[in-house]
Length: 403
Image (cartoon, rainbow, N blue to C red; front, side, top):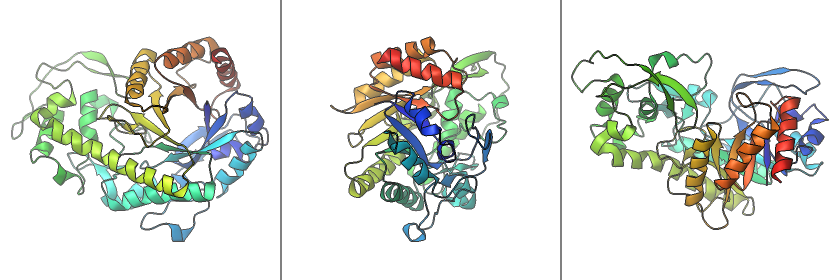
């Protein structure tokens, strides 16, 4: 099965959208039911070309009795039942509709509830990231899944950000690159030390993390060092410009944490495990026959949309890995996820069809072949609402060549 990702506003108000998507050659559409803030191009919509989405929203009717402390916001830029309207239009042309569900990535709720967000070792809050170590956050995610399955009645459930978000985040006018933090620094800055997390780590963890990021030792001032520019690859597969670390600088999070590594890693992985297990239980209880797709990363230190899954998850039907970076690196990640899969479990490649990828069917088809060799049995294509006509044509031809 191949899946095209879209937003509700790509469909609602555009009667040509369902047939355009069906013409891509996909069997299903991943339709956002819960999504974070964004600024989106709408190149096909008859009413607008750019849509500002100023806060995260829930695209189904909100039933107040179904929520507890945390209640999602309704959109003002599209109808409150936009998911339902879009779902019906897509199903009318024979497409399956899977509910694309963003879980802990919510700046609206995080800003309003600062006690529930991820905080780094310096105490800095990440308001876009709800920490699943808090029971209120776990309950919110459970209610989100239950409402989507009950009210939205999707053909499938896609879970994104099924764990804590980390340091890396494309926020408004992001201004963090000049600090020259390395991938190891990003991992360290992604460790949560909120009130629900901090006491679970070994006692020395916070000081160790702060010292590693500041290139110093606890109770000693930082040393002055000089370093040359280098290119580094992050866990998500994207390339960033950083600095070549001095000889005393940890090259990995494991080197930074030393003997604390195993305990800290276990705490980190447990955050995503606990949330995932509860959500799968809710989903199976609410809609037993609805397939579940997880956006996952085999790296135990992963943070963000693709949550850590170092031991696999037999309760899911599909495991999807991010394939937005260098294809060989992405293929390695896919192969690792395939090794963690159970018999009958499908592996999906989350394929970027937007810049910096070229609008070239031959290039895209070659990438699909690479991912298929690594174990992918289905392709999740991002993003059929944002892509230009040339890019949609490339997607269609690449899928035809791969069929």
